[in-house]
Each structure stands twice: as C-alpha cells, then as structure tokens.
Amino acid sequence: MEQTLRKQQSELATLIAQNSSTDGMQSTAIERLFLFRSSQPSAPLHALHEPSLCIVAQGKKQVMLADNLYVYGQDEYLVVSIDLPVIGQVIEATPTVPYLCFRLDLDPGELSTLMMEAKLDAPANQPLKPGLSVNPVSPQLLDAAIRLVRLLETPQDIAILAPLVVREILYRLLSGEHSARLRQIALVDKQLQAIARAINWLKWNYEKPFQIETIAREARMSTSSLHHHFKSVTTMSPLQYQKQLRLQQARHLMLGQGMDAATASYSVGYESPSQFSREYSRLFGAPPLRDIARLKSGV
Image (cartoon, rainbow, N blue to C red; front, top):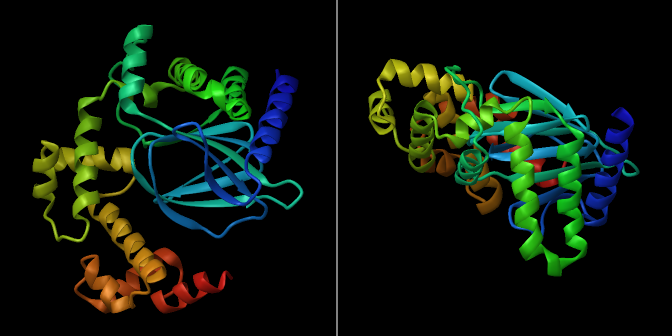
C-alpha cells in the first residue's frame, strides 16, 4: 500500500506542477478546484478558510487555529468544514521540490444529497468537534484526485466527467474512516447549523459592537449553549472570532487600499487606536505600520 501511495503522490505532484507554473493559488477550468504551488517556505498567512478539502502532493504545511497547530504533508489531507480564521504557512518547499497542493471547495448541500443517496448513517450522539481536521490519505482518494486534475488535459471532457469525479471524491470522504465531521456537516446538524448562523452574522457585522445575547438570538440558542458549541467548533469564543475578522480586514484595508492605521481601525469597529495597535501586534507580530511596511517590501 505504501508503494502505491508514493506512486500516486508522485503522479499528483507532476500533474499539479504541469498546471501551475508559477507560485500561488491558481483557479482551474474545473469549478471549485484550485491548485497551489510554492517554491519556498512562506510567511504566516492569516485568512478566513472556507470549507474545503486540501491534499498535499509534495512538501509540508502547517495551519494554526487559535492555539491548535495542525501539520500535514503528503500522507495526510486537511478538511475544513466551516468558515474558520486560521494562520497557514508552507514549511517545507524548495525551487526544485516545491510545495504542491490540491484544493477542492466543499458544498454542504452536495454532501447532504450524496449521503442520503448512499444511505450513509449519521454519527450517533457525537459532540461537536473542531471544524478542521488532518487525516491519513487513502489510495482511493488520491486516485480520484489524480483523475480530476488529469481532466485539465482534456477540457472537452470536463463538463461531463468532472462532476462525476468530484462526486466520487466526496463519497470517499463521507465513507472513509475519518468521516464523522463531514457527515455532521452534510446532515446539517442542528447545533452546527446554529453555529453557522452565528458565524455568518459575525462575518457580515464584524465591525459592529455586539452583546452575546444578540448572536445567541441569531443562532437560536441560549448564551451558555452558544459559548460551548461555538468554542467546540472554532476553538475560540465569538468575541475572539470577531477580533480576528476585524484585524484581518484592517490589514487588508491598509495593504490593499493604502488606508492609514487609525482610519482602518475605525472602519473595522475599533474605538481605541491603542487597543487596535496592541491587538494587531499580538496577532501579526508587529505594530500596523511596521507590519505593512514589511509586507510591501516582501521581507
């Protein structure tokens, strides 16, 4: 089995390299399929990670969710099941052996339909777990991923065959040994659905002050239940989640729109520039001006 995995990983790496000649995330002719290449270790990247499957064909990456660190390479795949603010970093890559990754964005509705059609059982009475996990990759999953990327060589086949291969990939995820989290999402677990409503409210209202009762009403949960289940899925409190969204958006405004720190902090909901600078430094490792200067210089 190990020999089969190594051969498949090599083939997937070759296909990704052929279809991603430059560093960075690249969209493809297949909807929801992205290929990522990095020829050197990267700086930590703060982002809101949407639900997706990531398979590393070559190299290694680490992702931090709150205080939890996940490291994965070519023997594992990463599944993110709900929008999560994370810090991602490529930690193993060289120009001759670049980091190469396959990413397929996930649709909970599609997972739900497939579960019902395949008559797959729901996880029984399991508590909510973090919406991010790293699991061992199987030859069957790798084989399907290879066939999906290979379709980029025959564009005329994509419209008919790509949905079938994507469906197989989802089936492999749902029927595999480590499928509990995805099945929970696919069945739109009531508690998870409530947390998704809370996260959606925070995404659209991150700049507004809020009381926990406001989000609890949005989630249709008690405040104590919201706190417990929100932290189970995201590993952070609603307030910590909002803070990460605010700081990421402020960084985007300063870097992408040339906004000064005071204006950016006010735009994302901060009333105290000193508090903004303090929390920004804690998350990004440097005060706003120094951090943005470093990013612009590429250091």
